[in-house]
Amino acid sequence: MIRRPAVAGSFYEDDPKELRKRIEWSFLHHVGPGRLPEPSNAARRTSPFFIVPHAGYIYSGPVAAHSYYHLVREGRPDLVIMVGPNHTGYGSSVSVWPGGHWETPLGKVPVPIEFVKEIVSLSEVLDPEERAHLYEHSLEVQVPFLQYFFTEIPIIPITILLQTPETAEFVAEGIWRFMGRHKDLDIVVLASSDMNHYDPHEMTIEKDEKAIKKIIELDYRGLYRVVEEEDVTMCGYAPVMVSMILARKAGKKPYILKHATSGDTSGDKSSVVGYLAARFGD
Image (tube, rainbow, N blue to C red):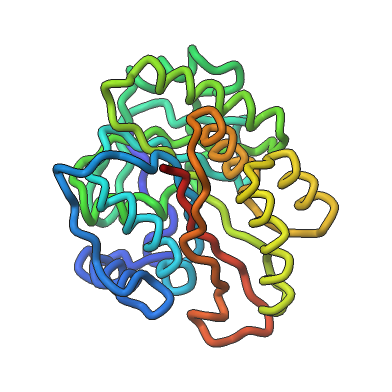
């Protein structure tokens, strides 16, 4: 089964050459890291869990590049588990792509069916089905960043529609059990989320900082309360809760790599979306 790109030509370029240029632009942008990372075969994986945004590359690409900068410098992972929100409402409450390949303008990446079957068996909530993924952008936009540096890198895409702490706990436990069975593999987990939506720049920064405080404290239930009670319109809080729970289990510390808004890249700060890049590591 091949999952065709849904947002190529809108969220990112559909021409391979131009897409590569856009990814390079993201790294070299003044909001980005300022340089391209160099993959290392000798590096040790110290940061297995990351937070990445998922808007159009012209808006969030430079922020996302901060997470990918650290990911790439620690070497090629054996498997990337991507967890994102379900914006479309299609499909199951928690959905994993059943297996096959995902395609972007930069080629195809495998979704190993044997890994999908295993992680489903280890989780109480994962449903192998494709409907939730067909038009969802939160995970698709991560794939070209990985492909730029690593060819045919295996992925497991998971979307969450029911964004509660309990759901996050179930998803995190399934991933944790899977990682425990595959300690020989270098596994990275990407939590995909944008931050506050469509308020002015300063208000978005203020709201985002309330959520970021909870992320730094690894207080995932506190993050949920902030989103629910403080009107922080963060779209992927369950995926971020998954990464926080995993970090707690693994004894990893949070590091905020970059916090910015679409106003920092577009110049229009009247109505913005917040973006966060973070890693959980040693």
